[in-house]
Image (cartoon, rainbow, N blue to C red; front, side):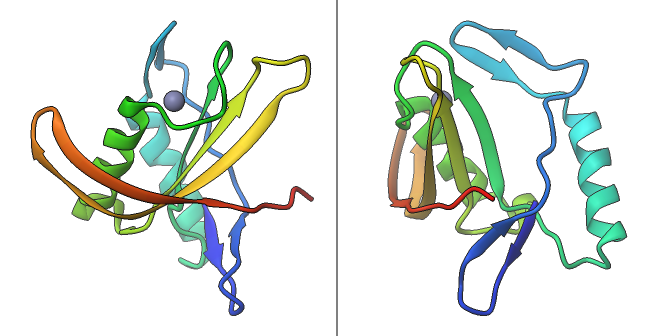
Length: 131
Ligand SMILES: [Zn+2]
């Protein structure tokens, strides 16, 4: 959650966790959507609608911080979903592959889902600063 500043910087102000009913598997993750929507509403309305959904984040504990095919498909689905109200969502991935965790931030540029497993996804990797 966050906002786009006047200089077009994307400012992340809040992170919403997976929720107690989230399902975590070695190669998959299903968020507790009810919890996340509740948290989203709190942040959105408490900020007088200035903080919005920017995108998703997750970890790759044993892989690089690059987008997997599944990540690209998910990013494309989010971008093309009217519910997200964000046509250029972010996907941030933290990798625990090395001794120190690393982070990559990506922003959807263009693409669409054609059939269940066919899609196009263009994205850009963003530079970032952590405060
Ligand atoms: Zn991933």
